[in-house]
Image (cartoon, rainbow, N blue to C red; front, side, top):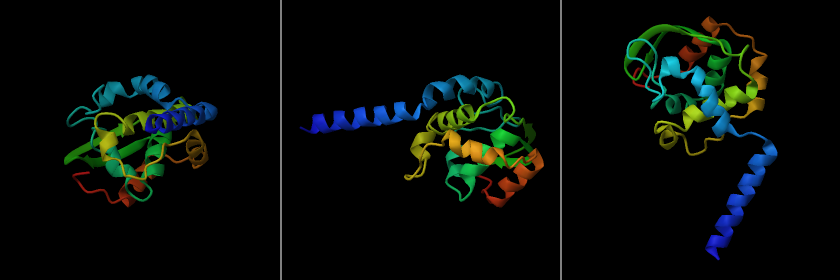
Length: 160
């Protein structure tokens, strides 16, 4: 009987995801090819040059405003000195808003948040980032310096 209910739940979730038309896993993995040159296939970045996404992104999404900030970094880029997992970096993240769709940005963020052990570090109430969230933030039309100010407001610890 338990197997029946488990199967019913799995089928229901699959139908819901299909109805939403958002296959974030496949789209996210394919879109991450744009990111891997800097952040590497293992998500650990290049020490002293490009930040690690592994072990870092869940810390951001757990902060008030962190979810929106991550979306805006992909949309509008980031310029300025940051500290990631105790390492100071001063580089630039390009804006991807002009070349990636809302669906691709949501999918790649979900891919990154569920890869390299990050899924185990996500807040218990984490919900997938949806293309509609990206679309709503796209209208902000920030520049990379303004995105940097958003990061400062998150008050990330140097070890985050």
